Amino acid sequence: MGNHNEYIGTTEAAKLLKMTSRRVVGLCGEGKLCGAFRSGRNWKIPVESVKQYMKDAGMKVPEEAEDDDRALLPFAIGNTSYIEISSECYYVDKTLLIRDLIDDHNMVTLFTRPRRFGKTLAINTIKTFFEKTEDDTAKYFVDKKIWTCGEKYQSLQGVYPVIMLTFKDVKYSTWEESLEAIRLVVKDEYKRHPELSESAALDADAKNYINRMEKGTLNSVEIQRSLLNLAHMLSVHHGSKVVILIDEYDTPIQQGYSRGFYKEVVSFMRNFLSGGLKDNTDLAFGVLTGIMRVSKENLFSGLNNPMVNTVLDEKYSEYFGFTEDEVREMAAYYHRTSAMDEIRYWYDGYRFGNEEIYNPWSVTNYFASGGQAKPYWANTSDNEIIREILTGLTPEIADDLTKVMQGEEIHASLDMEVVYPRMTDGNDTIFSFLLLAGYLTPAESPAETEIGTFASLRLPNAEIRRIYNTEILSWIRTQQSGNIISEIEKAVYLSDARRLQEALRKYMITSISFYDGAAEGFYHGMVLGLVASLSSKYYIRSNREAGEGRFDLQLEPKAKGLPGILMEFKAVSSSEKDKLTDLAEDALDQTKDKNYARDLEERSVGEIVRFGIAFSGKNVEVRVER
Image (cartoon, rainbow, N blue to C red; front, side, top):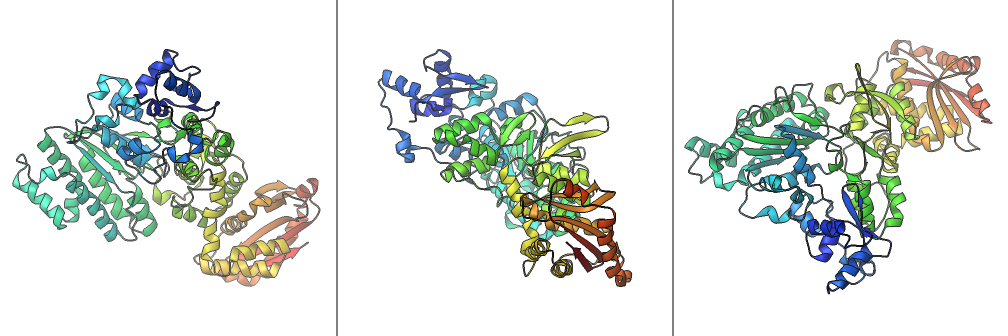
């Protein structure tokens, strides 16, 4: 059951004592579990006190769990069923989310959080609590926090018909495939309510609609009304208003942006969501989840003024992801209290409102793997849009990304209503998206001013740093034959102008469109993105003052033995490519004439290599001097 210095929470104690969590809280308050103390809204109970209480009560004390890990509850990796998780697995009680939804009386609530931060489980928990079923589902909540809140909340358990849709798997390459996937999701939800097919309360038209939904003969316009129709049918049959829950509503929209059918999917989703959630007299309330709000394209136009809760809001901040106390309790249960520093280093660091939050997917995988620290989140989150951001790097954006990779903070004006088509328009939208998607987090509370929201942003933890260094920037590696990025690294290390020139030319030929007359800034950002993989060995700086001007790119070695690197860029239109050789020489001369090396020399960098690089369309010339 644990060591002398280990603590467990009320849920774990209740399972051992075979009583409700509420009764355990009472024992703590009465002082009958010696050494128990309140931590925030929870209790920390010494394992030894639980054992002693069991002995005093004549109960059989289980064998020491640390000697038999088979006695520990498993984690439900990938399972989002509230009933299964709360009954059979280790469950972190987030049921007070239900209390807050009831108290707030919002007609429609949208929660925006990164992928794998518990949104689907939250939706399933809400469904299980409110849904009217033949089974008495109250038994799944009587030992949870929501039940201790009283009759006001208990009386709403199991009283509403519920519609629950999840679009998290609607990831297709064409609009036709996506529309069919959406139709099948809706069809499955119709089939989940078989009572409608035989309902005496529904007329022939309604039953004909259900039959055509089953056969797949509805047209696009009719499918757009399917949420509204289902809500109305359930309301008529049950004589009750309906709860509508939609998980990952923006996944089809993201796919539409990435695959070229954005207008079609936004038009469809606008009509589909508005039908069910806008001025619907059959609606009790609705909850949606996603990564982004996507409101500027009028997706939620007139939608009963939905309450939008983002990672910047204090309310609801503890319900998505794990808090410090929850992870400590988990570590104690799995006998890994001594690993808290490692867990914190890898998976902590998010800031939702004023709450310190751990990545729940990664933490559960860490414990399930027996304590193996690695980036579990990397392979579950779609990095395609992040990669698109990287293909359009400007020097300023690339410089900021390089800073965060090296542990620095960056300052940004935030736009929490990011629109996909304008996502790469500038720093504000790019860094706002990275914040919403979980790749950045506020270093402190954002400042609200009359002209906007401003925040210092940073990487949350080691896991995300690994993603930047491997998963995100690796798109450059994996798309290039001959491992071009490796060639670029070698060319920089060896001060090999010819090798760098060939690698850059090969990269531009295979990876970018033909930029006739592209500005110098484009090439600057491109090279900065390509050398970002060197950040483990170099401090990478862009557009900084040094000597008598501003260098384009500087790589300061982190360890002795490596040379310092200076790069200066020039660019002309494709019609002037015959000037490339002279321009490359001019760029090289500029590094000397402006004395850009002074900054590195003052930091005792012994050897300094200068590169002059000139671009024209997909052509490049490189000159180097040691």
